[in-house]
Image 1 (cartoon, chains in turn cyan, red):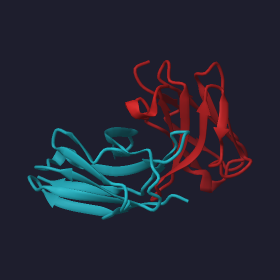
Image 2 (tube, chains in turn cyan, purple):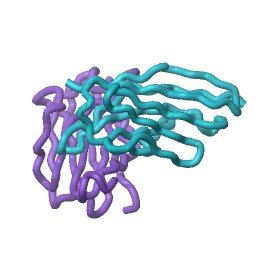
Image 3 (cartoon, rainbow over the protein chains, first blue to last red):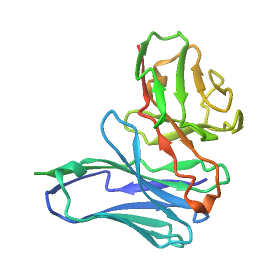
Image 4 (cartoon, chains in turn purple, cyan):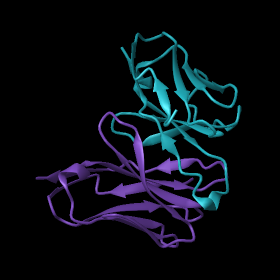
Length: 112
Length: 118
């Protein structure tokens, strides 16, 4: 059974810092991995999707990497801003049904 | 519509009552998913629809939970005889058909329905 773990559970950084969020999964047989952002009281916003054949994806200040063999992904946020404060979730897609298995998230607070 | 719509956004009910939560996916999205997010918990998969059929309903926690989808569009999640542990945010997502490797399988989530059972 696939299990997804995210560390740290919470992180507080001053504005401008670069930071890394970690995601690990137990079953390396995945189709892709997605990083989402969730703001309080809101739904999920997809940030980056990495296919199993890819090593990384970049979007603006965000860079996500994938090491399937070791069951790890990282989300790198450069030059953090207070607007980046949110819960970040990673999710792996391991089956034909496109069902996502989510981690419990990292709550990020960027202090101005 | 432009996004996934869910209603109601908030629902407070008494223990033992039945509730219905509605999801209106993005037009043309054939796949639809229901997830539950309890306080302090991650997102828990409930059920997956492809068209009107549900090939994977493995996440439904008990027989009090059921879901249907009609016309390949709107889906309704029904919880019968609600219990306090059913209190959570229920999220719906949809994705378009297409080849898995094309990126077309990115899920778009609605804002969720917050259920509180007193």
